[in-house]
Length: 263
Length: 218
Image (cartoon, rainbow over all chains, first blue to last red; front, side, top):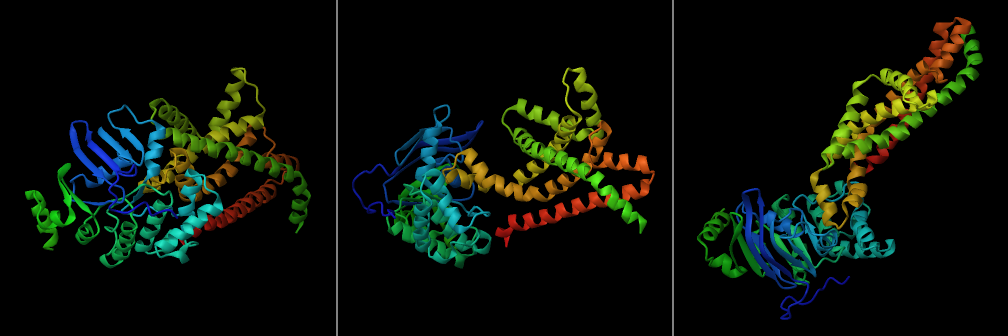
């Protein structure tokens, strides 16, 4: 498995990064996202934090067009989509979804397929991989998320934490250039959440580019390189994790962190 | 036990009727269920015209008793210059009726699949069609199977109506025998048993299928 996509501190600007400029979304006159900018190097991990309704999930879902942005440009792993255009052509959209892997809060494994089929089906249909090849990849991914013995199980037989780890394996199977996590541990109890966070930590250490919407402040501080704080549909501030956590520049950030950390 | 001797004597005559009934039912389901799925997909279409066409077909198919639909087609089509056999007419009427009801069951099944499944299919790189076919449809079908099986039984029983337009199915054979022997109660008791047995056998098969479709739910 070629998951090691380079070192995290690579100084060379690589095509694998993420570049989002002036992204915005509105429903009629209701603006839910405005002027979001983000530049990520390949191998970088960025956490997005902020209060509910800040637009964190909407922003993340705009990146693979689960939500359609109304302005701005998205460039990921060689795919470039302009929201200013009337409608992105099918080829760019397909490409965008291929280079982004997504992990949902509610796992969304395919319940009628076994764990093995969940991981092999996208490879077979999207990458046109052979059955043997797809199963080989799946088996090594299962080992990586610590569940090699679950290949033949159906998702309903697994715990929430196990399902989420399988969901991560499924997303990784297409070798995406960036992994998007939408509150991956919010549906799990704190203890079970740890096993998912451990897998994500490993992934980060191996150089995966990751964008994580999260309420896990320890993860945000310890694992991510930078933190982006969102509020009210826009970016309040973006900075190195340590700095944002200990010395935020925006009053709203201070307020939010105080509320979260004083719990 | 003289009635048993009668029954045994009549069975060879009823046999071809059973075959026609099953054939009629099979064809009504063969055309009706996919038609219902198409109607369900049209009802969810972005195009208003398609939604309206689906609405009209469904409302007529569900609004009219199958018997009325059967008569309407049987007597109106020749006036429009379309000459069909009574069997073909019966297939069209029963398919329409079955398709209209089936479309509602398909819609219920499709809308019961969580939204996250569609999103997971899209983010897994599937096209809309591939995602629908491999992710959404199998889950929707499992949900729709029990009501569709019930509908299949109703269509089988409804196939007896084709008797009125001279399709030589089970009911018409039974009528034929009874009008020659005047043993109405005996003939129709036997007919009832035949209908009942086939229905029961079919439902037993569906039960097996349901277990198979639900094995992932443990």
